[in-house]
Image 1 (tube, rainbow, N blue to C red):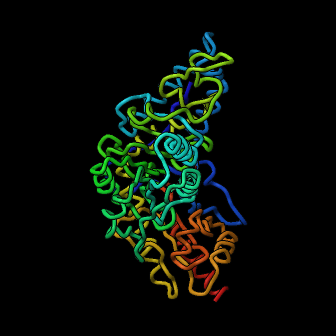
Image 2: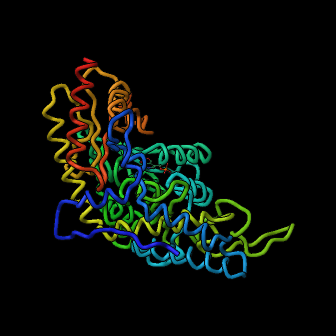
Image 3: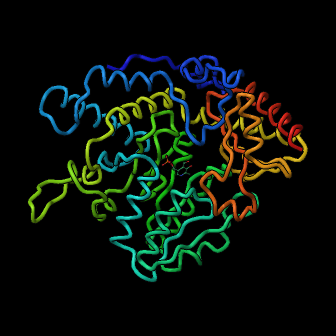
Length: 419
Ligand code: PLP
């Protein structure tokens, strides 16, 4: 059974008790290249608390069995644990029905599931799919490929220089035979928090369903799918302190019921004959093959861990880190910021004038500081910005102001060495 774990809840503080919290994350306590690790690549993936790591080994030490199959006791326990985790996810994003939660491999698979099944059923020649210019490749390529197959058009909401969406032509764009709007909640490059409530309302006025890519928001914002009224929402567990290889697609029942199955095989069927097969009900219609039970249970533990700290407290603290880091970085000459939207999450993308982003990343790495460099799987956005890539530091609730000081000194060193 899951071991008890230790999270200190300081709702009355706007700063985090990071000393206590950091004890929960074993990976943070190591040296990299002879320096204490400063992990600032949380947008790519987050680190895992001991409770999440323990949940995986507990599962294999106690109830490992194939869920939804065996009638034996362990099989029943695995099934019950999995379905209880589904309820935890349902409550976490406030979905109306438990069967609206589909377990996937991650955001990419969730978006592919919707793109392929939606296109098969609802996209025809001359129709359009609307995305934005700040999408991750995961929310571009699946739609682009479906549009090619169906001879439909891929329309793009432009981005302003400060990293906000340019919504000046949104009504016009939504009027161009758009069958679905697929948009990111938070940009993984710019940190921009998009006004998805406004976009969903506008799209719905024209009966256009909306898919939200919540990969970057689910660990940083309170998500309430009923309040948002989005039709689909996809996210990855590994960006919310849970393991890789597991994710969630939320869909309104009415939409999921209208879509055909995505993959075929065991678990998703009701009856199979050589001539014909019938398909299972939600959510199993979309969950083909043996599920990632340990990943699902670990995701439940990660959600409980975040909830004990409080999503609002996490957002508040990460915002403090962002403000502090932005101030410190702006004191250095020749820094170019990418993404200065007023509504922003704890992602800091920048370049040093005339210096390649990967050279900065390499020097920071030598100093034990992990940041991401490159195009961040957003090549079209890089083309618009006219740059090959950025250096990106992204913060989580276990990061500290002291770590930001180390990072700022690292940037100064890189600048001295490279300019
Ligand atoms: N969407 C956004 C905004 C992302 O930042 C990412 C990953 O960085 C993805 C989609 C893809 O997520 P995954 O690789 O976990 O499927």
